[in-house]
Length: 284
Image 1 (cartoon, rainbow, N blue to C red):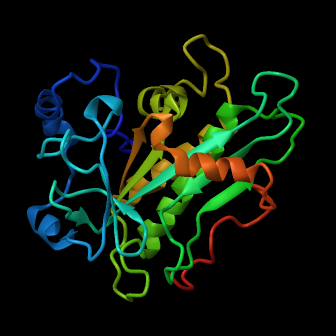
Image 2: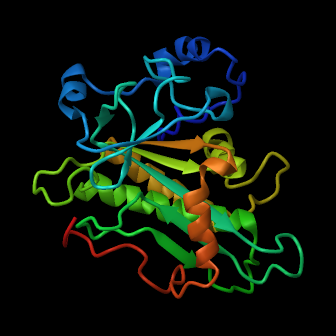
């Protein structure tokens, strides 16, 4: 089984309480980071320059930490523009982590006006940094069997984001792209404002797979081909021992990915036709 617990709950259960400490105590035993103490000390670093994003616990479902999440930063921007998981409330981060924001859009969703859809993948504030990575805006191709929908766009963006995460897990470069011994990512976080995406992965996907891709009504799961791609990617993370989590946030906290998705409606890059990721092992 792949690991999707932590940021959004993996099995149905009580919603987060108003007191973050209660949730932390309840979740800590099964959802804490699986990392030895010496690895924690090695990978926990203080960035030279950081940008901290703060917001209330009640607005998101988040991974539990030892610190009070209502006061701590929930993502920290490192010196190369990528976003990382905080190691505490004092600006320290896990250098072997990366947070990737994704979003999909489909104007006229659910109507005959839905003639195009697109996705966006936001890796960070990369402008001016010497890295091969760039934020991604792309269109979904027209297909007679797969009409344009918002859900399909959300899943496509998630698949591209997960694919980016796997590259960081195999090549590194999320902390210091110029260093030959740059840490490989051991913890990838996919940030999304889509409850459909996060809830489906953390609550329903294992059941769908075991049921032959049939839902609780006995009918074929919608968007099955993309779900199969995502499931295959998650299996690869599990084989490599890399943690991947899905983080559900309100739409207003995912504006960068949404902006890219909106740009994707007019983008020249098309999913499945063009290469969206940079060349492998060329330059981090």
